[in-house]
Image 1 (cartoon, protein in one colour):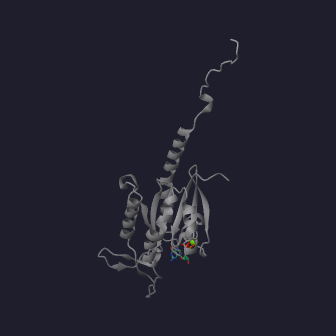
Image 2: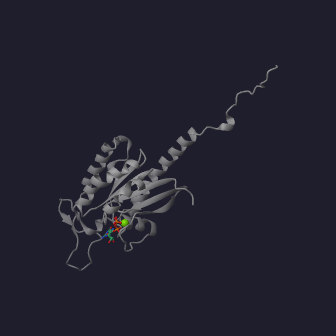
Image 3: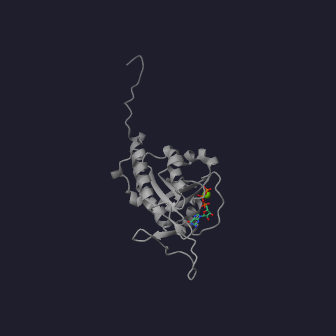
Length: 233
Ligand SMILES: Nc1nc2c(ncn2[C@@H]2O[C@H](COP(=O)(O)OP(=O)(O)OP(=O)(O)O)[C@@H](O)[C@H]2O)c(=O)[nH]1
Ligand SMILES: [Mg+2]
């Protein structure tokens, strides 16, 4: 198997839908999942590049493994559940610290999943039923007002850049890197992964160019003229 050219890692609390997002993207379906143990990865070919996408366990007992999975990551997807504010707080409290092992120029995406369970906000700031809502003709809606707003995710993104001492002007804009998704309906799932692939590919190309600059071409190096040694000239 060819070595992956770049690595993307999904992090976030248990049950937020990391495995479901990855399966929706890679397998185009929304199967039943079981809580992840350790981690697992998929390989995605994007143009001529091989990108590994790592799914990690959100359960506390596997927390120590997180920084191992993040080692050398080009991008990290910090995932929360739009219906559980605690899952957004956990990203800052528990998961951000795991990303120290990622590349220095690692990109961050903040992803609020399970948006299919929520009502959309209307223009007056009230709530209205989302397009993929309940059944037609049904008077009972199971949808709830969204608990975490996109602005909260944008604020976290900006905080992360500050924490990592990254210049906001040199990084992708918060609006480009904060997503609301549904692994169930597929809403924004392709957009999320493919935005990241398109951002990661130039980083890989740049890294390769830097590496090849550092390679010394031994054959072209001139060796000093050899002299015969001896006691009599
Ligand atoms: N309605 C809805 N349910 C979802 C969505 N994504 C995931 N789920 C459900 O949420 C539960 C947890 O999903 P997982 O993908 O296993 O969550 P996880 O983040 O991988 O959890 P861990 O592996 O324990 O860290 C499952 O019952 C999924 O079917 C979504 O977008 N909408
Ligand atoms: Mg999982």
